[in-house]
Image (cartoon, rainbow, N blue to C red; front, side, top):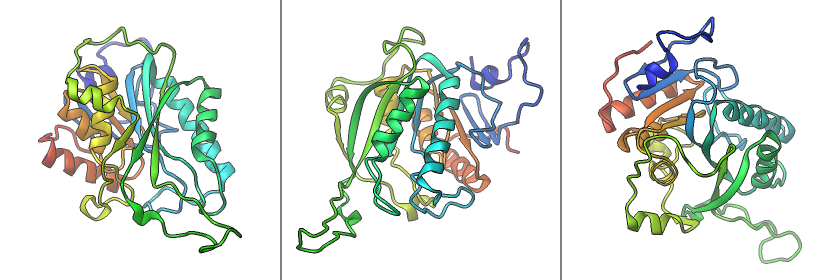
Length: 278
């Protein structure tokens, strides 16, 4: 079944009265220009794997999203979209959630811990964590009290990839066809991943992640042909990885400018030719 057939079945007793048309639709790739909290175009319990990096609330200059809310507002927003993703997930869905370890801009907060606790309250179950070492020490722009014990700041130049699941960890559905080789499996099941981040200038997005991140998550945690979902698609990296690994991909992006960027990248890098463009 193609993605289009999944979302627009010919006959359905539970058809939504108003279903948004996709910004881009190809046999196995769909992009929606919509808000993850409002979208009604994706069937419940239809997603095999979620791979995403949500806004970090560190005042990044996105076109539409407000990235400088209070921490309480940020956690409230996070709880809402985590619940929406939970509803869209199959019982054996895995969730690779790329989030910061902590935050010191505008106050010190244990972001990773707080979001994991929110996810568990919603119903997501915790499995493990991958530490992504971006190997980028240039992030260290503040040391607090320089060479003094009065008020030093400790900054870890890493990000976290929390591995969650909905109900059952063992995948029993799908094609059961894996495309990961021995060397990849041995390397990637080591919970510290070392590869560089992505260039904002090269991609044209203020907070892109490298395609290596979703590629590893997709090959390690899903079968060929599974449905991979990114609720904060941004520049389209997750769908690039899905297309290159023969998975079906669904992305939601609130900003039309970034939808267009994702479409261009898919066309150029994954050779996806548009069949529907609104």
